[in-house]
Length: 329
Image (spheres, rainbow, N blue to C red):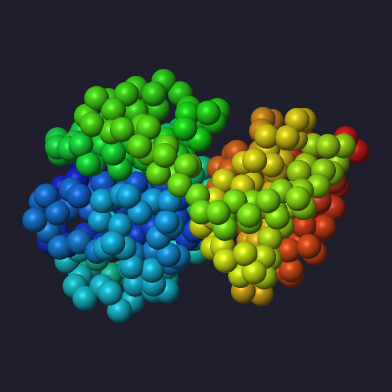
């Protein structure tokens, strides 16, 4: 825990924190960012919060969500060198906005993550691939630093922990996860409210978008792979947003016998792919085939071409592979 104490000493000594989220931000990176922003404010320090993509509507109940700024780069935002840049839940710099300080800069980067493929790009690298969420790690940071876990902070961290474990349904949910979640509830987190805000707050347009995606779902490789796609035209014609696709890929994984689910979304000349798997298939290995990454059960990547063509190439490639447990060839 020597490095952790070094991070705490640094955070308490610098006058400014810059919190950074990853692309297509989820509840883990945003819940952690909210908790850190709350603590930064309580310490009387200057704080800012950035990410490459907009703040999803489903998480706009988190404290200080209005302070979040979607930007392409940090280069014009770091006006001082006496600060700490805190990057959460981000395995490599390519997954977030550009302009992170380099090792030669005085400003330091704190890389706090739980991905097994983390590239250790920070000045401080705290990577725990046994943690089911970075929310667990930030909780442990608070305890080690003896920072006060207020009701609002507990709610933000519970959001991080609960959403990254599928509300405690994923195999990553262990005793450590449940013990920390229990303590966060004891400190004021409200599980029912988090669930309602994240999963029961959909727009009608979003429901229609799900209908379109589900109507296109198809099975492949003896019923073990379920895939679908959405185009930009689908979103615009229905008046839906990218936020409305949240968790659609998980619905595909619920189909009987399916061990791999993938959602293909058109994204400015390329295709963004969300991948979910069940044991024994490793989603991170699949994503790595196209330069992506993530977790064993939830990963993502980008492919060239339109969604339909990308979907076809994806299924064909999986059919040729033995090592990921899909093909019987």
